[in-house]
Image (tube, rainbow, N blue to C red; front, side):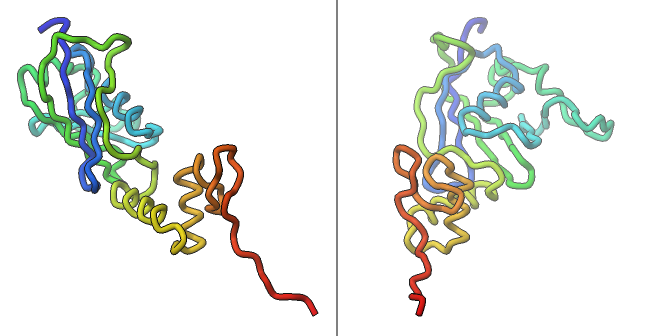
Length: 194
């Protein structure tokens, strides 16, 4: 299977509506490479621990804590060719064990086509990027609900939008136009001085 690729569908669990990315990826990359691809595909900042579950075996990145208690396998030493060619057709990726971003990764097919540049290419996608430290998929759904019902949101909720979507809202939660200027400002105190 040298020189082949896999078509993978990466689906965010616990998020509605469905949120997924379909990619073409070289079969020679490691789980460590796949970790970095997922980080880029979903807009993560790689600020938290992560792990892969492959047929009941846990793989993770370099042991940054120096602990000998970690029994995870080294994700830098196993390729997708070995995983999808031998072990299984589905693996699970978890990022940020507090927020619990969990993704199902399914190998949909083996392909003779290879990415034109680098080790992967995005074929299709559905759903928004993730937002770091928002409470996982549940917090992300809440942020989108607040965004959709902006006029009903509290001032605190509007401030969350500024933190989560800095290209669309300022720090106070005011919507921004294409030039970054506030469109909607907070109501000012309308009491008249006597």
